[in-house]
Length: 175
Image 1 (cartoon, one colour):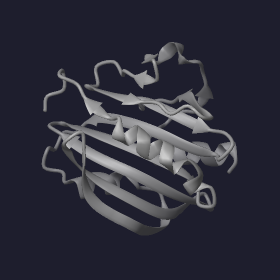
Image 2 (spheres, one colour):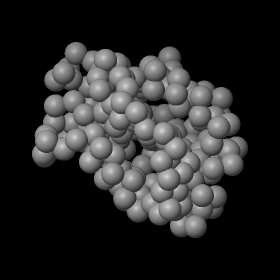
Image 3 (spheres, helix red, strand yellow):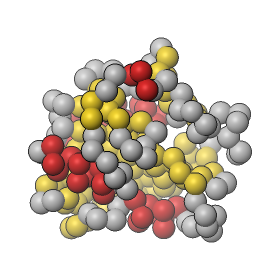
Image 4 (cartoon, one colour):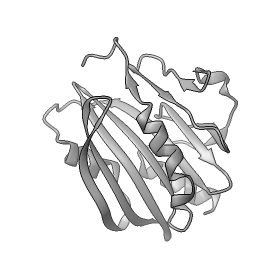
């Protein structure tokens, strides 16, 4: 997948700026745990080849060069609290073509209802596979998303699943 395709995939996830590699200086990561400012959660960050990258409108984005894979966590306020998890998931996937849902089920992430979806699709003629969790708490939505080329998707999917298992809401979140 070319750098241009990665940027297109990022745009597809409602991220509007170029990605650029940066150190952890702008991110608060301590002992492998990410603490986003004012977002009400913490999450463990995988090692093993994952590098933080800076992107607009995301809490954190991680890039795995060897497998051309990306993990992003996006938290945002929603104006209409009546949106279902299904509606929020559809919004997340705008811009993908040839979508085929592989699996979809309701799960709990830190005791909060989440919609877990694995799907295949195309972005800029590149076949991608996506693993996403959409969590709605009050007036916020949390998108935990992993994507990679279809042929390398399973290589580091476990890193993302382990990351999701470490996702914890903090006391300053209005649960």
